[in-house]
Image (cartoon, rainbow, N blue to C red; front, side, top):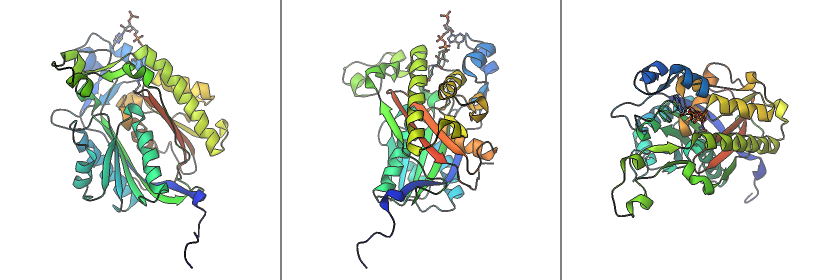
Length: 344
Ligand code: UT7
């Protein structure tokens, strides 16, 4: 009696037990864009792999997408019993307060811990580490993690360098306390950052730096800007290195990885990462053609869609990796579990 743990704490892990996603219904094709921007269907397709993307449209905010994805993940988990909600987003409904508490209330979860995590396109992996940390430290037994973005609201509608790339959407996952040896257990989440390159991906206006300058923002400062070519190189390098570290931490050989689920920034980036890792094309999960780059939401949207279409199956060794503004990057592993899906 008293004090002696019945299980080895080193065997405790966050285990995924539910997943869901939501894409807003409005679809914008490359043909739609090439009719109003100085671009072509061929350029977008060949340089990015994107054919169409979903956009939130007038009046729709990040919380609206987050609630839809979160509800599906809770249904997939078979229970709304969670003690924390982590929302990864770069596009909160408002600069203040965080969006997570409102999402929690709209999901019937008023009272639980709820906060936002900001790591741009690596947001889901930073959120995953946060959720796993809550479980490891006993702050929660079950956590709802949502990554939701309305990135199109940040874009200059006239900017051909960014408009073709980004789309909107949300993905969500429920994690519970479990054993490191069971299917669904999240392996070590590898995270990193390099703020020396914070200017490569940025919205200059709206934060304390611009507001304290004492003059109104110029219009271009209010929009998202990215130095694409430089970001491309960092993305391949960092996603590959993080993926190798996470795979080694899981004790897997790279040739044992069944599916690479990489942040969908650009089909050429995913192909380059897979090639760095020595993974053939048929081990690469991909949905960028239909959804574009959904920033922090891209990894869980891809997981949910790949699980639904059977390209992720129970027992698969799955390697996740992402990269984004900050700069930030991350990777993790999961042995894919059997899940109930309610997305379709
Ligand atoms: O998600 C977070 C992290 N983000 C990323 O990882 C994105 C990384 N970067 C990229 O995916 C690519 O750099 C882009 C898709 C953004 C751009 O592709 P790129 O192959 O790097 O093109 P580029 O920026 O080097 O531009 C090549 C040419 C330029 O013309 P010149 O100078 O060669 O004559 C651009 O002006 O393509 C031109 N261009 C376009 N042409 C038609 C740029 N955007 C367009 C466009 N349509 N939309």
